Image (cartoon, rainbow, N blue to C red; front, side):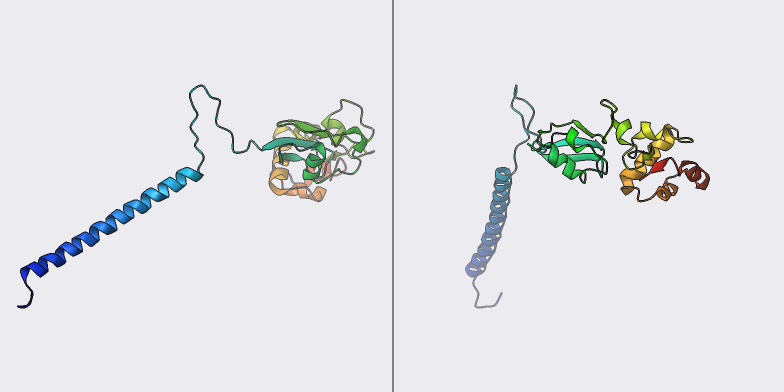
Length: 201
């Protein structure tokens, strides 16, 4: 403190500094409260009133269907609410060769959780996947459309190996050739030779 500064002026400066600090703290609190209010306004509440049903699911506007049989990429697909069978077939890559297009009503609405099975031309009614997994005319099992049960009918392929083949297909996509079976754990050259004439892609 210089000789010219009085105790009153020093005290005033201190009060000014404390006041500025208080203003900054209050401003920070105000910003925090404002952010909380904004978040509360844009985030839907997950609470459910007593006696009310469960809160709407975030996926309520979507439905899931299992597309199997004679389509290019069989699998589970999420479709928008109100989708029709034509949308499910399109999601699965379209009809595979030999698909019986006349046997399906493409305009039919699909429902959540249903399985859509596209059969091949000439398949007997009620044959299900067994009719859709064979290549038209030669009886070979299609590695890209067969389920575990169909694969299990092949020689040297038991339930465990059939599951591995389906899992490999789910993880890596369609088989592009019969030789791709060598990438499945547990399948070697000898097993491939035994299967080569019995399967197709």
